[in-house]
Image (cartoon, rainbow, N blue to C red):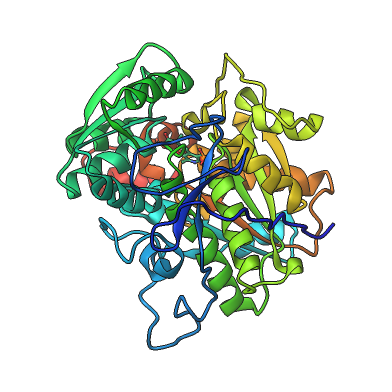
Amino acid sequence: MSAHLDLDEPEPAVADDGVWLTCIECGETFAPFAEIRYTCDDCDGLLEVRYADLPTWDDFGAGGSPESGPYGVWRYSAGLPFEEGVSLPEGGTPLHYVPRIEEEVGVNNLRIKHEGMNPTGSFKDRGMTVGVRVAKEVGVDRLACASTGNTSAALAAYGARGGMETLVLLPAGKVAAGKVAQASLHGARILEVDGNFDSCLDIVQDLAARGEAYLLNSLNPFRLEGQKTIGLEIMERFHADEGTYPDRIVLPVGNAGNTAALYKCFRELRKAGAIDEGDVPKLTGVQAEGSAPMVEAVEEGNDEVRRWEDVETRATAIRIGNPVNAPKALPGIRETGGTAVAVSDEAITDAQRSLAQEGVGVEPASAASLAGLRKLRESGEIGADEDVVCLTTGHLLKDPDAAYEAGGDPEPVPNDTEAVLDHLGE
Ligand code: F0G
């Protein structure tokens, strides 16, 4: 099935320099920076950033023109609300070849877009460089987020870079060590909540509604603008290497912000005439079995996602029961002809090991993409002729405990060369 994207666009009542916010539910439009809002005043629907002019590849300076900036988020500023942001800098991540896994999985072409190579080690940096720039525009001084870890690390670093105060709410005992260490050293005030990520997000939304802090979770539509550059980079680089666009992008899903951002990227490229309908990759989301409300909705054909109160997985980054961006992401999965699949923690760890054996070090949630590809390939849902990009969202060092458990044990040896040789000869 080829993609059929919904490209209808209501006219804006208010636009600032050709940029405005549109409610995806009722179509109401708002000026982007005059007041702070995260959802629609009228119906509480999710907001999306819209532009009067959508850029094509030439406007991005792609294709080797002298205007081309270095690879990274701000290379694509023609499709963003600002020319530049609070930057470390971010984006321009590798699109690895993994020939042994490609052969084992049995697809025509497999590439790994390793977002763990961003400055704080996850794709969240792409959203933060834009989000913190917007925070400056609207004139706030305290930034906040709920997080399974990576968002808090990115917020802390970009907030520090921007000279702003940061507050992060984390589910107590469920955030990987590397991420808490980052948030702490970059100077965030860390509140550990006796609840899961979803309850942290409920609280931080309340704080934001009371004007206590500027919310920088992916509910904030500007975060997703930065994250859509993952899609732009994949499309530009894959096309430069292969002369075609990938058939499918497989990615881990938590709050479904990235899925929504990629869908938006494809819609904008289509509207600008930069790609054809047949070029749109199938968006394929992967969740852990113990935390799979999006998969449930896709499998049952539901328009709404049921909130799971109890969630559990070793992939703590995607331990989320209430994916707030589902209304943006579900149409993306459906309209691109993609799907969603749940994988076991064991399959995630196996995939983490396989990637590590190709030199690509990722955290457990990231490896869910490869685990999902394997499962869908085995069931025949993904064909042997497909060109696939798997997104790996966070770096191995984010979760040293998981890496240590998945890897081999160190071998104690005496402090003596002969004894070491003896040991190796065993
Ligand atoms: N992979 C990693 C490593 C993540 O940290 C996250 C989300 C996801 C995948 C899922 O992305 O939410 O856009 O579907 N982490 C958030 C956080 C929730 O707080 O760091 P999504």
